[in-house]
Length: 364
Image (cartoon, rainbow, N blue to C red; front, top):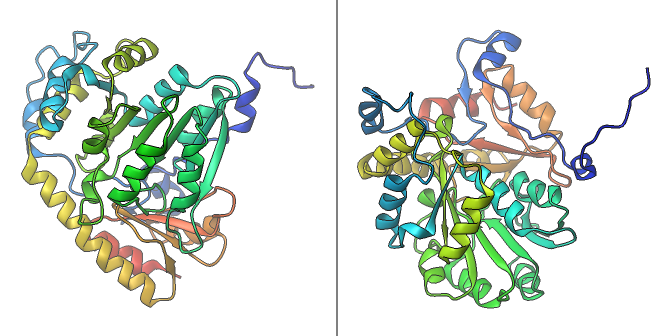
């Protein structure tokens, strides 16, 4: 029986399936292992704050009633924390949902979208889906960001410049003066989108969130953040965008679905936002383990990228899928990278010390 044509956009043929990895249940069933260290998705090994658990112990009408479509209480708390107006905050079903919303709102057929490479695939995929043309700025051989190339691309006035800082999957980052140069370089007609999903792990003397500099800018900009990583709410899928213009917020609200964040997620995020102690504990653990695991990998001869995330990107020296398959047989889940030119690289999340030791002991 011959395959018939489907009424589907041709752009979808250019988008590979998302590499979401295996679940704990799938690994147990396939590899018959009892102890599993899940280090493939950059999740928080400490879980969410106790304040989240307490908040959800008595959900009341959270299950029964539709959520606040604007998430006003959470947006107001975010606005206070980051020194912006509530009208500058948009909620999403994870920040990845907002990437799709932004692309559907802004990218037209033939528009150029500039991003760093290797990339978080959805930065490219949603742009391609809308008919955009992706311009990749590939990292240098030392796996640092090619800042001069990125700056030159920003000056060419693409429709959008969108990238993670720190980068996902590499972990490299722009220094504050470099980010300021990018902000200055973009055209008034360019939408600058900085994905700061890993910002909590990155703060240091040579890194700063772009938010303060963007707040002083008249350019068109959006900052993306998530509760999935440092706040430990990956399973609830909630993130947010901060925009530079309340009119931009209005258009993003029109482009998203009306109830894109559920009531449980909104309540949990509001509770998590108020627990600075848990956040600090999470970040401290990740930084300690990042330094320790990186030293160990380097001592064994692996080439590693500099990282300001809760993960390490390293060259396994061969087929990354086969390498990760070997680790799976020992109960360790990592993420083999599959983008062209980087298919010998693996991204490993930083878990508990015991989980990281399990990973190190399982290396071939």
